[in-house]
Length: 448
Image (cartoon, rainbow, N blue to C red):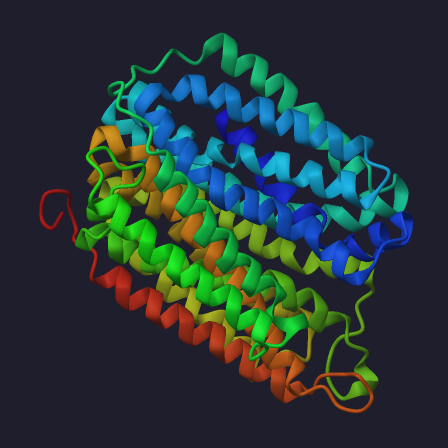
């Protein structure tokens, strides 16, 4: 049930992206407002994930899991019933509160399963996160075209509700680590800097990266971050232990998380756009908007296969092996697309390789975190890693958008050179991920 819920939550993040134009038309809203359908969930999830993960460590993960299910059900139901952009944005904010499901699931696996099965189970959950993101992009077009955008919420709800009931019935209670006081100030400051950072990243393209509004938001993010760090370092029971996250192993894993999140979201967002460019522009493949999401299917297949096998690879070759191999493989697709992308099979091959690589990485990261982090801080460590990937994805999307936008001519279209540079940037980011992965120690206790 945890793997199924991870799949559906990840789908909910990506399902609406290809359907934004249709939703905008149906609700009669503006281009600026419709972007908040995506941004609202990212912001809410970014804030809730580490907080819920930490509260799960403190008060019992099974309790907070049910809370996360309730938020996800409430937000998804509201989304299905929404008839205005305001209600839909509110629904996405509530949905994002369910993001705590991910770190809580990793902690529950560690609590209830024998050590020999932990890596494989975490790999399966991580694989579903990767597959869900790609599946959402693939299914969005057919669902909206044939049923309407409301079914982007009704269909996932049919899976979430039974999963919640099964979780309530069968997942054993998790013992709390202790009744420590809740770090309210830390939570407020964490919320402040995450909101400012992601708000600035998502609005930077429309406002202008050098505009006074963008710079002011980033300055507020920096000030809030510094204040948060000071508070957490001097609090007896911090919401997020910065000293934990600064340990060499977790720091390197979070670098891998940021860079692979950057690359994955960049690929997801811009490859479907790239294949829709008409061939008469001198490049592009002229794939229809309805079918463009299908090019992500090879990625989904590759990520599912390697994500489910990552546990066996770790058991045989060590925790580090799938992480390094996945990062290395993730470099190749950007190079392939920059060198040759004039046939559909070129794109499918590149994304298939990318799926194999990122599937290994997505499965290996939480496994290493669970093995290296203390038992009472598993949730917050996994939650922050998931959060950092989200931030990397937001920054990756806006970075590639800026590169593409910089080459748009009088006809309103970007050049082939801009996409070539974008693919090379994604490859370079994966090189950084590989370097960080190589620096991760091979076993717990070697370098904490």
